[in-house]
Image (cartoon, rainbow, N blue to C red):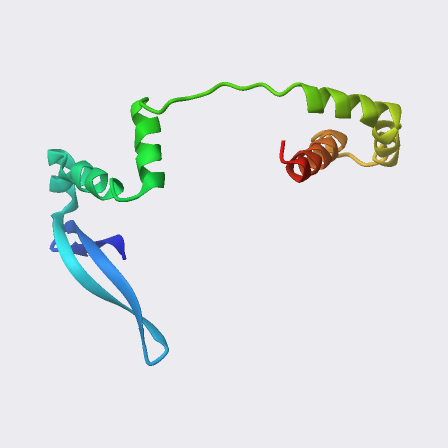
Length: 129
């Protein structure tokens, strides 16, 4: 199910619609017409409706909490692996080789840094760090 707006009589109406298949073809059925979109927004009813539904799902609740500034945040810095890998990258001449191979090309961003970060990400995700 999802929300959609339907224009009728010069106004936009908010509808709850359900998708289904009939004889292998996609179709939709209107479950409910909630009301005029402008009136729902002006009265705050739309926000209340969405927040009410969000209580039934953890991911939406987290997004709501972050938006309200209520989510607990933890600041963490991992400096070990990137520093270590940067040193290995430089000492093994990976950086120099890539920069040499790309010297003739006119990229508008540092491709060597993109490659470095891609490899670092792969290593970190494999190690589950």
